[in-house]
Image (cartoon, rainbow, N blue to C red; front, side):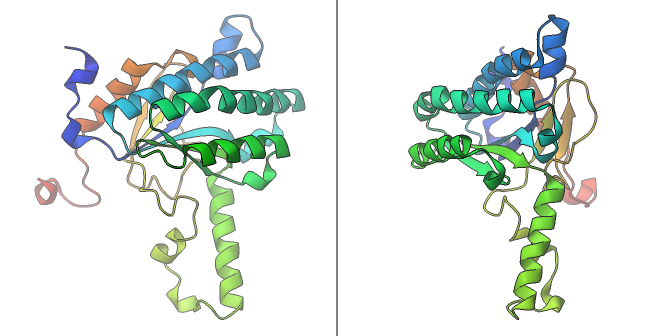
Length: 246
């Protein structure tokens, strides 16, 4: 029986988040420049997006470009931005074919104007799709997100629109980028690294974590299905005992 057929469609995660890691190391192993790995990683993005759509997963969030990535060599940043524009142009048809809606999180104002324009165009074209929502985290980091939420809350406090006594976790959740998106049920990280790299720190408080040694350009549908099967075999307690959730 194929891995996909072993998945219980009644126990699917509503939201899968992925840290796509290992492009650079994949390229280095082949004696190529890092951008060669990023270009080949686009195939994995397509495959995993299609896999999520095939299963009927509601949200798939991919960590595409962090605020820390702006510190990389300018040549790599320029190449990544160019790749992002070309990929969005090329993959829009695939998103439409699979009924996938594109959503953004992150500081989009930090992106070059041509990238922002292409991103916005793809978002608008796919807005009516009703299948999986592909959430791209671009110019994103959790510390930026939480600091931004704190600034906006402070501004409303200064205007008298919020009382300090009313600030709690429920209120803060209304100011983060994923306001209308459920928290991830599972976070997948490729390439054998065991860290979350400033990604969705607020949202993954009770997410299941799944690490694989597979480098991102080699990550395919069966790898994704294996992660989902692993998730379905875990017990999620959310602070309760096994007896309470059993």
